[in-house]
Amino acid sequence: MKTKPIGPIPVGYSAIDGELAIGGRKASDLAAEAGQTPLFVYSRTHLDARMEQLRAALPKRIGVNYAIKANPHRGVIEHMEPLVDGFDIASSGELAMTQAAGIDPARVSFAGPGKRDDELEAAIAAGVTLNCESEGEAKRSLSIGQRIGKAPRIAVRVNPSFELRGSGMKMGGGAKQFGVDADKVPALAKDVIAEGAQWRGLHIFTGSQALNAEAIIEAQSNVLNLAAELSREIGAPLPKLNMGGGFGVPYFPGDEPVDLTAIGAALHERVADLPPGLAHTELCLELGRYLVGEAGVYLCRVIDRKVSHGTTYLITDGGLHHQLAASGNFGTVVRRNYPVAIASRFDAEADDVVNVVGCLCTPLDRLADAALLPRADVGDLIAVFCAGAYGATASPSAFLGHGPAIEVLT
Image (cartoon, rainbow, N blue to C red; front, side, top):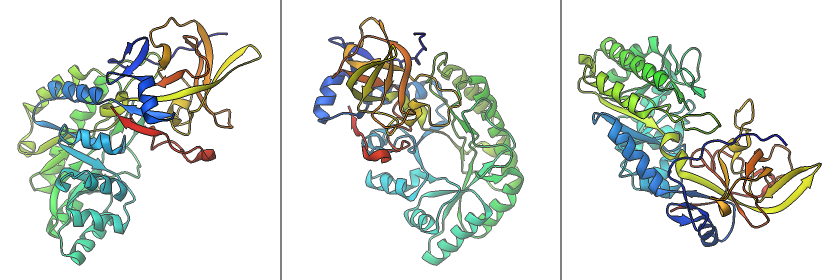
């Protein structure tokens, strides 16, 4: 059987007594402590290391916001709280998560093209910054602020004319449900300021999951140029500029990590020569997947090993209901293998070609195709890496009634 390569296992994972270790603990111990599989395990060590890398590469002038949509697990949010400068949310549910974690609302900004009136009111009352996505949303926010007697904190999300080349999801350029077209921003910002809102600046997010440093550098330069131009047209200082993010992580064979050193060097150069309109502007990057994606591992257990027409299947108690992206059903055109390993025999020689599948009654439930792995039998643990972002909450955990996986921070 012809093999298909698997994606690169992130740096920082090793073996203890032959087993995969996550955060210095054996996978089998983590599963035993959880009491069942499947489970997501998030590594504090990886979260800390990623933030250290970012802080070392970026200019001190540029802050880092965590977009909690990537992973809203309570333990992850609380661990990130002292490490980042702010948090970006996309619903009143995520607002409640930040409140439960005791995060200062002044550090939180709220984006999303369809904020309901009750969500706007909750955010205004709390003192969260609204990244308004349309003229209508801004008007509703101002009206709600007048009704409850509190001036809303408003930034305008900009839909720029450019995009982030090579990004997995393009969030700017051309017709988009996100943000206000750039040519309409100055008039809206002037109205917001004139109506007494607390003016908080601009949010320009162009795309996500990009691995090409040159494309990211180009987009960041375009963002800074556009922000300076809009600030001049608005005629008021720009308190803050959320420059977006877009940094990707390697999921598939052939993917290379984004060159953070190159991005940092380019930003150092730009920050040293900002136009006057941005001289006192607070700058930040909004990152989600890049901060937490490689810190997560999805562990499931082999419950059957079977051969059909010469093909070996490892059937697990996990699947696409927890890891939709790894199954190839999260916007991927051609299915490729995520980084996968036999956690129980992490340092063993790969000598078995297998399909790793889940427990669901659908042929779409695949975690690895024709993967060359160490031999695994019933009871062994399978590890799917890059599971720290858009896994537990972006997968259909209610599908077929199997329920969600356990999540732990170690």
